[in-house]
Length: 204
Length: 173
Image (cartoon, rainbow over all chains, first blue to last red; front, side, top):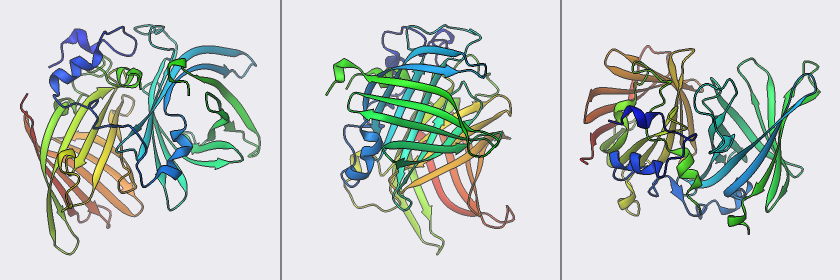
């Protein structure tokens, strides 16, 4: 079994080799190529590019807009990989970034979430699932490419319609915003805005 | 590609925020081999093999797994059963005392959402796919083995049809 001390290690910690601990238990564990793929599946290259373009490591600056007009900014990391024989894209969203995280209850939301995205050829859309322990629920969205933007739409636990949008997409940068549909049924209120920049080591 | 993703995704163990009682999937962490039996609705049976891997992820707040059938070493061969190369994310919901489960198998375009809980000595996961109710159960659980049943009901639990079994054994370290 994993020793108690190891259980406290996490994204927040500066573990030299966190995988090693897991691989000790599992000779052929999740990192050894079983999950990850080096390229999109050859049968789906064209369709998978929508999210495949993000594969790599990114720095992200997040801005959250409060109801009273304030803005809160944080720095984080956002990393995308091909998974499952290159038929899906999984990402990790970590805000604040590792190394800047506070261990223990800080009273502040610290995201460490992951998203799985699979393409539905029948509907020509993407099914998105976001899991983040910060939130009690799993977020499920359907995504489409509309006028140069990737629009992911879902309904939250309280019945509110929201959309998470990738926009201003360039090879080494993109922006992202989250919006909630207001009670009038037509106005969207922006809640968050991210600016992502590809890490230099992976620059094209 | 850097190791940033793996380093960030995989956690060395369970978060201290998940209690021993809630940690119903703990025993699965590690590597398993399985015999797979797929039962066709016409009574036909297809037998194949699978490799299964479980790891703690997301600071130990969630578990991600891989179910690969046929196993990677045999994926070029002709398949006896359905093609599975999928992953599950399991995340504990302390408010409801249940686990939220998302299974995706892009090899067949499948995505399912279920809720898992302990029932007696078993782990029972239920979800809906249109009019079909799915029940996926871990039964006959020992330290080094389990028997997984995938069942479906189209009459709101009155009857269940057995669709798939995984008879799994832990790979010795």
